[in-house]
Length: 629
Image (tube, rainbow, N blue to C red):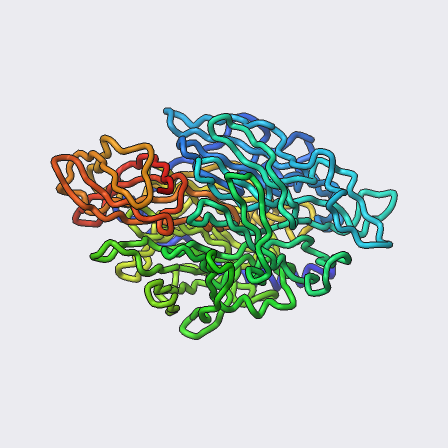
């Protein structure tokens, strides 16, 4: 076979950049130093599909590609690229027909054992009648869109919580073949961004359709504004052939530049004026700053070799969007490895804890980004260990500064990052190379790490059991632990699923993984945890609230963490906000509730931390729904 030497060479490159053993420090039995992982667990019902190219015809158990921690503490998740196990020859030639509709589940961890339920409707396909009316087929080129089961998938959508605690899901995927080979089920796969919006109601466990967007979006990002509205950016209408004959040529071969805003009161989207247009990468890393502006971190998903744009050089600049003026302002070029380098692809980007100054004001934000690959499409191939800290001084005209910090212990493409209640950052998952370029040839990174913003240092943590490289998740739970899930890769070099390299050499598994594993950070092994005896179910921006704790003297900080809602490493609403303590009286703490720019309305987890010799120990959280004044 002519491809054998190429595969061998690629394996040599990937193996040379892969850790072959788990570092000894991570194998210690000292959970107070490295934390500890629990046993793997999965939904006992359904079909595993762990064997390559499963031919049973049964639907596989869904894997947690997208996750949201609901206000009631349960966990909604759904899968992606389902049907990959039915590909017989080549993903590109078959998946337009073989792709299946996504499945969703709700996981409940409140009992002695995990339990699952199936939300309604069980089939989450948003377009059961097909997507032909919105498809932008090319003229004179045959296409095949006969499979209507894959025309409205949740996969590759964006999702954020609305102020009332329901989950808004916008965009997603439709699949077809273009061109197709008439009389066969073969053709060239075309993933298409859809206009659909759905809302999940945790009280009824149901998905409901909502108003469509004006633009189809595959890989968009959406963030909650201080008003409670949802602001969505980017995404692409067609990934492989982004040519739209009914649109201006400037809209071709680029992502959706137009932005839209969802009003939860009217239940409708509005297209923002042209001043709000912005060329951004797929799944751009955006965050809401404490002054109410939306910050773009010069990072996004590098879906190499696709996903590029003729104007992608613009993605090297960080920028802010002002909802008041509906316009953008460029800030600067981020530093990577000590030099101004710009864009980072398929890495993490998390905003560190927002803290008040002595006057109770939140005047700056720090965003930690790392891993992934460097540069726009085609970008680099090897995963990066570099980490950057970008600071936006919101009290001084959004002044931007950027610096490199200590690199991670391992290079990671597609690393997941979680800001813990004590302010540290936990990182897990990922591969040593870009598995969008060479699927199945990467080696999983099982070592986990923790970054301390106070010291700027990384420490090794306990190793995860399963390698999770692509379409993975890491989620902060209400009890302060972190749940790992997901792994839905493309098969080996886009051919049929084949685990021979995984079984013999330890490369990433070709098949989906429906399991979960929970990490208990070191702070859960440092002694007795503080307890929140009482907390309000609701809080109002700009007011105060009282909580009752077991030992108020020892409470060192109280923090609100936005309920996680993430996919593809992206959670634009991710934020941890330290509250000013105004008074300590008996067992009661009086806390200042920041304005809606710092705490946009929606669901949060309230943690109380106490000091110990090793560091802060968080309580289990109490759910709080924040409302505008």
